[in-house]
Image (cartoon, rainbow, N blue to C red; front, side, top):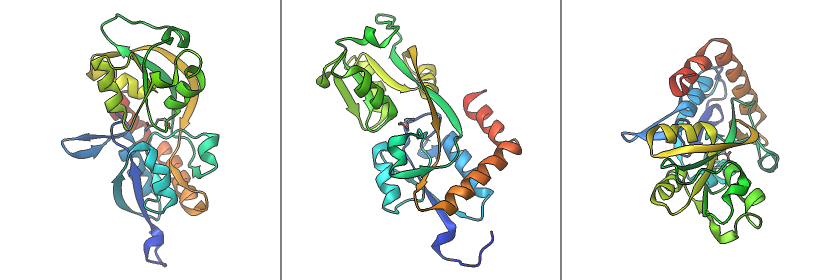
Length: 234
Ligand code: GLN
């Protein structure tokens, strides 16, 4: 690295929220996933040294960043206006819409949000999937108490399998991963046109610029494509 100032300014501690496959999950006790590989490869291209990962519930990541517990969020986090008030983002590194996931037994096959009327619906706290439920369903198709908010999407999918909820609203690539491994399937996609970015503090232009430069390098040198192949087979 460029060094010079030594000290903690030239380091990056990253935060994530496992349980969001294939972006971040625990495998045999180890944190793995697309975000893990991508952020580490990006930091490798910068003058920052990588200090390691801290794990949080998804809705604790932004407070952890603003409190200086971590320097970067890598958690499939959608860049949106609401979050833009509190934190900044790197350039986008992945695109997603929301999937409506149901049990794979075929008993309930909704085709649109109105087909979810009067059903218990799950999502993870603080996510854009929860935003779709709150903005499009609660007070319209479903009552407030029919919305089940979970700390983690793994728990939401478990409750879907158990029959405690009839649908889960979750990012499409993660829905596809759950569908490949568990008795659930994507009923339909609700287009939101989301883009994921790495979160940084609003006053931290240095890390934001370093991450953007690193991202463009890993796109140009083939690393990005290698990692999408590895984790999404695309
Ligand atoms: N992309 C969604 C969001 O930003 C979900 C992210 C997640 O659950 N890790 O809200």
